Amino acid sequence: MDDEICAQGLTQFAQSYCNNGIVRLREIFTPGTIKVPKTPTALQELESIHKVLDLYVWLSFRLEDCFPDHELAASQKPLCSMLIEEFLERFGWQRPRSRTIPPRRNLKSSLSSRALKSLNT
Image (cartoon, rainbow, N blue to C red; front, side, top):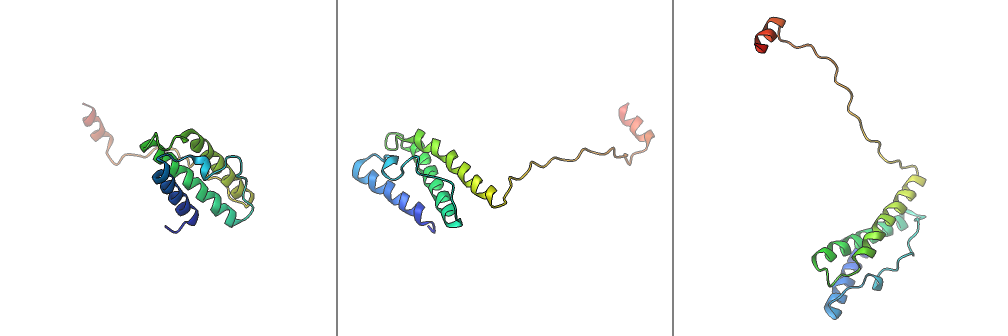
């Protein structure tokens, strides 16, 4: 794993699970401490935190009793996403616009009008 923060989060989850049989999110993450990153390095850290929260949510679906802070983790993920987007918008990134498909032009059929009439009968 090339993401040090994710690796630490996974390791802490595993240690807490082995030692206590339960993993509390507040043991490794303090809600209310995340903010808009100011540097690309801080952006990467926030992205890693988002991955750790996502991992916690995923594990909470599989081991519900052992990862009881599902709602807390799930509520922090959109906050991380919003802060990441805010950083990117400050540095000139814009959300991709939804692409619309151009309307179809009337295409003339290569079939003759006589052939079309025969199809309709």
